[in-house]
Image 1: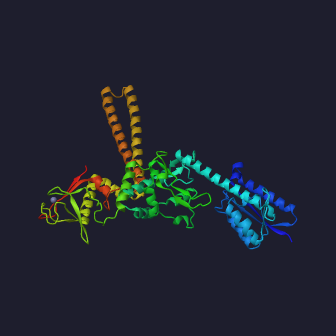
Image 2 (image 1 turned 45 degrees about the vertical axis):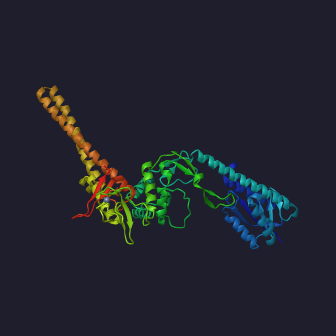
Length: 516
Ligand SMILES: [Zn+2]
């Protein structure tokens, strides 16, 4: 009876070094193995297994798995390989199969290049030594790759094959990041939205409602390979609050590269672990920034503020350092009851009566008053007309129609100028021909000049309007016009001090000292 042979081939890093065409290597391995089978009349080829795992550390080798299964199920009598290292570079796997399982399953292992044959008991030692050498080789390669990557990171080179949302890898230098114009606008919007008071989840919802593609969907639409494998249809990959958070905290957008945040346990264990922050490799100004430092810092402060628990006594409230007593100018301190939080003049403790401003003010009521005041203040900055136009801005088609109309008007004016110029020519001719007098010519020429100035200034106005519409076409409609929630940053930006007076005959006197 003939022995049923399964041949196993694997692409290796060495092959890649030698030739550009890796499939050549598989062909060669295959050729060598089939030739061997033909040489031995007792062998018959039953199946072929071929993996593309370059490392040999067993990261992902579906064909290897299939081979092992077939061995276990008694479908194969002989496993034939070019070398033991093609089968595996891992000592443990060599031990497990060649010296244990294969014996148990009655499977013989033969590798040609290093003369290994499990039928030959005497060469177990050399097989083990081979395994050991292979393993050292693997560890070496792994360390070399690691140190090469580290050196690149330290030089500020971008080593990941995947650029973060907002950037793309330069087509001229795959270690450089360049701004992806479209995506970078979305990144900018996310930062702006956060500063208007929206949280991670609200921003994600907002973008999803606007049908703005999520980073993975965007990459997919651009035909870029993805770093995550997902079973979901691409269209179902939506913005998540985590995605928003990681964008808002990523220093990459400041133009700095922060790499080496994660690593694998070892060349054998591919589990990803997070590195300590002190070990991260950060190089400043390696690429164009998308977000300015000021905006980025404001967002970081705001994230800290907002994630702080608010209900705990003694925690910083959004008004801290800002609210004072109108009567005695002392600061207002926080006072909590079971239901609400209050602010009260700090000179007005139980048992003391230094200040006439005795009643406390409910925190949420003060918050509503201040929010309203800020929004009113913002409104006064906007010309009513612009406000109305902004309402329309939501509808891009309106803008587009306006642009078309304006461009038509502009064209009419340009025609008028051309006509005017012809008129000027005729004027000269008339003057030369002595049809008109010098005085008449002077009057007419000043009329001509006036007309041209008028047309030109009208064109200027139209150009301004056109650029306004064009700009706002690209801009989102969520430019901050009204705040929904207060935070420390908004307060700091707008308000110097808030004074709360005592309760009088009418409403409580609250005076805001603005920052401008
Ligand atoms: Zn007071």
